[in-house]
Figure 1: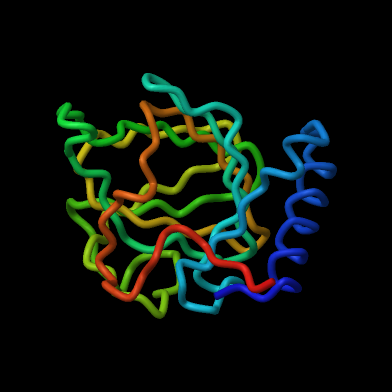
Figure 2 (figure 1 turned 30 degrees about the vertical axis):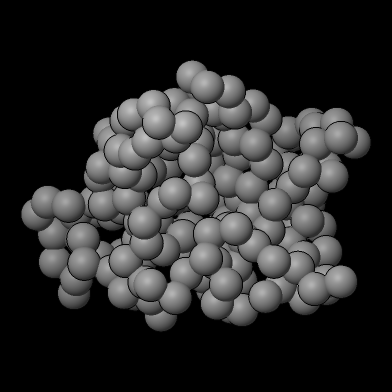
Amino acid sequence: MLTKKQYDDGVEFVLNEFKKAGIKITEDEIKRIEVADFGLGNVEEVGLQLLVYVNTDKVCAKEMVLRPYQTCPQHVHVNGKENGVAYDGKEETFRVRKGVCYLYVAGDGEKEKIKAKIPPTPVNVYHEVILKEGEQYTLYPCTQHWFQAGPEGAIVSEFSTRSRDESDIFLDERISRIPEVEE
C-alpha cells in the first residue's frame, strides 16, 4: 500500500517531469495521475506513474512516467471475456518522449548482457529493445514484457487498444496492479 506521502511525491514527480518536457495537462488530468506501486511498497524501484488521457472500447492513450531505473514488472495482456464478450489482449505502442526506456520481450537475449538493472521481481524475458527519444516499438497481444527507465528516468507515451490493466497477468504473483493509497 502506498502512503499518502509516496502518492503525493509521485504526482509531484510527474508534474515536474511534464514541465521539463513541455507537456501541458489540465487541472482535471492532474487529479487523475496514478501512482502504482504494484502492491509491493517499493514504488521508487518497482512502480509506475501514469496519466490516462482516454480509454474507450477501442483505443487508449496514456503517458507513463518512470523514475531513474524504475521498473514496470513483467506482465502480459491476455485475451479474455468481459460481460460474456470475448476480447483480444491489448496491442500497444510505446513511444519515448524523454529519456531512455529499456524494454524486454521474449526472444534472443541474455540476462547477463542487458542494460537494465535486474528488478526485485521475477523476470524471464531478456530480448532487449532500447528505446531513445522519438523511437517507438509495438507490442502485440499476449506478449510477455517488462520495462525500465534509464539513468535519467523516462516519459513514454502509450497508444493502444482498450486498456484493461486490472486483468494483466504478472509473473510475480504478489503484484496487485490497482494501487491502494492510505487515507
